Image (cartoon, rainbow, N blue to C red; front, top):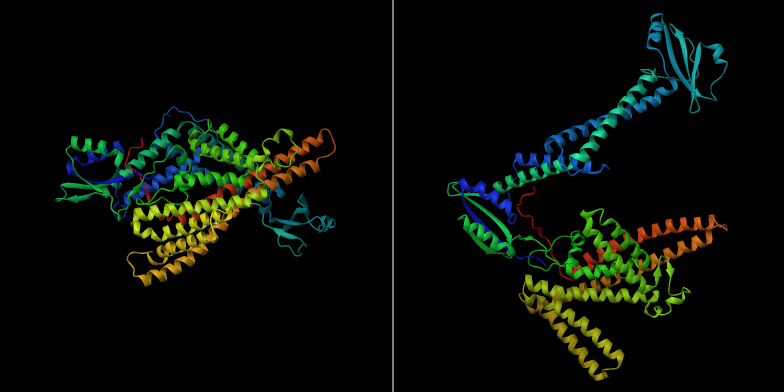
Amino acid sequence: MIQPMLKYSFLVYHKEYRKFLLDLRRRGMVHIIEKEKELTSEIRDKFDHIKDVEAVIKFLSKREVERKDADCSLSGAEAFDIVKNGMADLEAKQQLLNILKKEYTLVEPWGDFSRETIKKLAENRLKIRYYTTSAKGFEKKWLAEYPIEVISHHAGQVYFVMLEKGYLTEEIPAEEMRAPDRPLSEIKADIEKTENEIKELNALFDKHASESMNAIDRYWKQMVESVEFDKAIMHTRHEAEEKVMLLEGWVPEKQKEELIQYLDKQNILYAEEQAKEEDKVPIKLENSRFSKLFEPIGDFYELPNHRELDLVPFFAPFYMMFFGFCLGDAGYGLFIVAMAAIFKPKFPKFKSILTLAQVLGLSTVVFGMLTGTFFGIDLINAEIAWLEGVRRFMVDPSQLFYLAIILGVVQIVFGLFIKVVNITRTRGFRYAYSTIGWLILLLGFGALYGLNASGNVSESMYSTLLYVILAVSGLLILILNNPKRNILANFGAGVWDTYGMLTGLLGDLLSYLRLFALGVSSAILGMVFNSMAMNMKPDNIILGPLVMLIILVFGHSITLFMAALGAFVHPIRLTFVEFYKNAGFTGGGKRYTPFKKLT
């Protein structure tokens, strides 16, 4: 659910305003209303600096070192400057190392040489020319015909030099190359020097990743606080010849008493207002422990606006079921639950995500037991004696098709009920007549079909009820769909909406077949790898089980990854496209971010 918000306007004497802002920040409850003002150059510079600090934190967080809780001797700003300069130095040295390695590759065939010797030869008008040709193209007779010396054979090429005096009158049939600028030993020495410098920089980064992360993180928070404080001043209006400061903000209704106590104690004037329809009210969600686990999934789309329902508690049970349906293997579900339990103590920051993984894993276990699939083993047809008592609770794979359709119908109808509530909250109950008409039509047809199929209704009663359903739903859909339009306009709009609704419902319902397709495909993939492992293992007491184990681990790893990815993505698609649309979700809400102290 969405916490209700109250709008407050604060009037503060200018000499007491800074203290007031510091008090507000310490209490951390007011979401300041931002005016449409361009950020100052000073604030933009601070934002750029914050991004630099974030880049340093991200860079250090990737270092695989043990983090120390104790503070380092340096301040966060000092440690940040050292690491940032080191990062720039590291980039430059890595670029230099790449250039040196390319140079080494080019000079390697020529090896070492003496600059002094080459200089003395040049003084005596002797010039060295450098050539290369393929090993097949090199002719040994050249050694007698020309003053040449083979330097090396490298990668199928022959590298050699020719000594000439004055000017060469006859060209040798080989590719002439540029003379190396320096001997190989110098390049190698520079490479070793650069690599050592890079090692020293990495050691420096490891040291700061271990000792300075807390200080740099605290420095980042201080910078964010500074920016938020500057923004609070920027969004303040100056009244009464700049003697009075006016600040507006939103406060959760639950924190109203705490805020008023402070304002009365400080003798600060304020005005309280209820949220209006046109207001851009920040959104703060307050859900149960179960629904809260699914809030990160809802964040993939957008937050609701303040006048509609938060759909997280309503899609959470469906998403859990859909994930289990798509993955559909009890063995995979148990594996996910076990892995999440192992990693939860090691990664406390991701506790809620790993708990969500466990919930989804348990749903997979339930659906896997329902369909009789365990690591690709078909338990329904497996000859396992102790399963005889529970097989009657298992669902044949052919029935999954109908189960997917039933789940789709339930969620679509449930979404329409929510749409009635959303329209009532945002526009008024009269605007929900059309949606109510569709609910009467769908539920009425469903109930009437059930009664007729079971033989509990006579033919005359069946016809009467059918006409009543069509008349009531037709009146609501075609005539009363908008209280502000006349009958003819409503009828035309109703006919068009009927066409869109019928085609949309059919498309939405067919979308739920992806649950059936994904559930069956993951089970089939698991069975295929099981069959491969059994058929491809060699007839050897040692190699047989080893090969079978390798195929099973590799195959089920691929299947689990692909199936889990599909089970995560496709229920999101069903949620955000089919369910959100039928629930009349508008969205556009902005998250509640109170002006608060971070350090």
